[in-house]
Amino acid sequence: MLLLLTTFAHTAELRPASAEAIKNGIERGRALRKQSALVPGALHRYALIMKVGGVRCGHALVSLEDAKGEGGAVYKLVEKFKAAMVADDSGEVIDYEGTYLLSADLGLFGGSMSAVSETISKSGKQAHESSARLSIKDEKLVWIVTEKIVDSKTGPAITSRNVPLFGQRPIPRNALLAIAALALAENKFKPDARDAICVPSIDLNWEMDQFDVEPAWIVFDLPGITGKNAAMQLRLRYLSGELTEKGLQVETPKPEEWRALQVWPLDAQGHPLSHPTPDDPRLTVESADPATLDVNAPLDLEKIGAASKVTK
Image 1 (cartoon, rainbow, N blue to C red):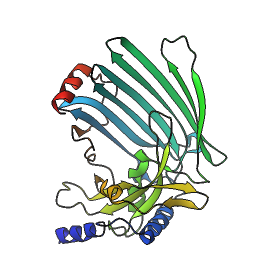
Image 2: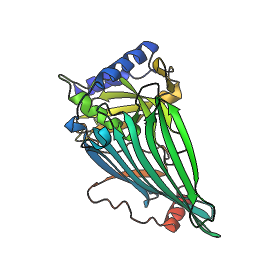
Image 3: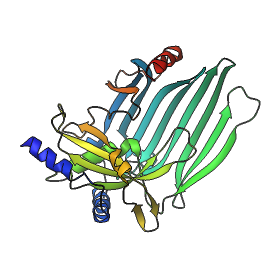
Image 4: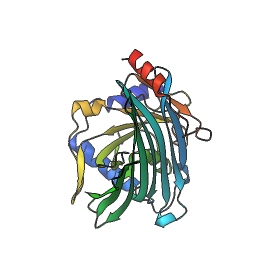
């Protein structure tokens, strides 16, 4: 029976969503986000380790916490990651941390981020530091970026950037999993691929140059025969669209967009059990214990470079 139900649910997703399905998904997303207080089940932590050819090349720690009223927020999203990349005779190590304040509907309204990018080559080392503070002003997400090259005689460069929000609050990508807890808090909730949810999401990338607002298409499905220990799965796609004065506008998905699917196995509380498979076939991702992960652990560029060459 489970296999039949799972097959039927997946059939509902074989074709890209129609205009009518998108409209219904946006309405469901809007209704689900009508929250006025913290949902305890939304609080969670997860950690992961990335490897190339069996060699550790990065790690990340994400936690959604009770903001305890900080800055008027309900939730606080904390992200930390460290990653290394090697190309030819040079390598780069990126160390990033972001802290974001969210409202009861998981919408972003402020925060800060910082990153250090260190390039190592035969000619030496060069470190680039950047930081930003985010706030909502005049219905726009505004961030002030400060950038500088370490040990340079040139002073820091300061720039201001913004994204129009038209009075709406997108959800940071790493907070989207908490949508599961909001759904579970509803009476008589059952995972059903026909009841998709569409919400605006924002990619707060470490480079801080541009933050893209994208529609996130979310489906709660049965765990399937491969969902060991999972109560359900969250199926996630990022679609093309934008925020306008009329609200979230979503384009009819192209086949390649529809195939770009992330699958998150979730436990009975809606918390992630593992991370989706990376797009890069050379990489693997392993779940880690958030309580013991050392986010400052060093990454060996020499070993990463050797492993990258073998897996090309």
